[in-house]
Image (tube, rainbow, N blue to C red; front, side, top):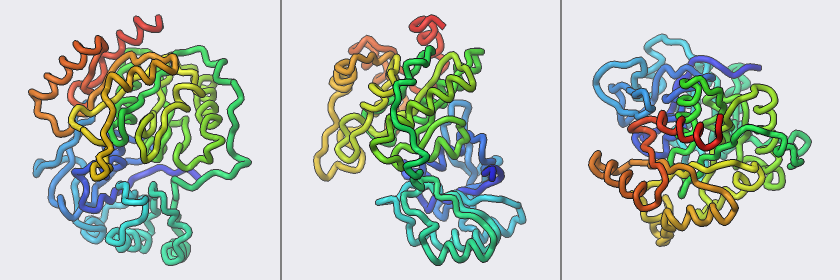
Length: 359
């Protein structure tokens, strides 16, 4: 069954926070879902605006995506939707109690649920019974595949003869997927056929054709699923470049991740996303979990025999003046090109990749 169509997104009063990165990603563009509105009690009565680089802001000025207070207020419009998407990441990946009523109302109105949380809602008896009664589906995107459907690493990655570029980050929640998306779009706009490998639930929701959900995959099969996604993309679509969405960070203590991309993907280059504003790993400030320096992260990547070919900055919390200052400072100190993806786009990466890899 194809999952595709008009959808609304629940953001639980957190639309302006990093917790709503799934919602933000879908608003920046999805081949799978046409986003009709956002449901958020804190920002209702406003409208969502997205610029050409994917920068999001809300205002009273009308747009195609209004924000409603709750499901009931949306339903009064009479607009038909097929799906209600849980657009937030929650503590522990559990369904917040305050979102439950909107989900129940959606189901009762024959709207299927798209759930990207770690909690598997099909095991929630109340919600599952309600869905069955109303003949709608709860799609748990993070449900783990059975072992029989997982691929083990085989070495086929060495048959891929086009540049493979991974977007890694110095921390979680920095916008790695968005940067990879912007690069693919910039390359395609310059008639250089490129594709992206998604590794998270939002990438699947955006409708990318190749990938898997990293944090729902048994550890022994992560490398194989990565390899299989890249090889399939290469053989079936014959792109000139393949961009890979990274996950977490090499030294994030709550979920160190990244060596799989550097080693098992046999990648050709790294684009490293960084936030100059962050001092501690996100969410672990109370432990004093200091983030290592940007240059030490680059050296760590070099120790794997891989090169950081560009740095992209998450500019959240920076003034316009600080953004330009940090861009120039980092580029000068490290002698590596620096980009501001959401502020300036990624057109500038095209010539760098062409000159570097000769395509």
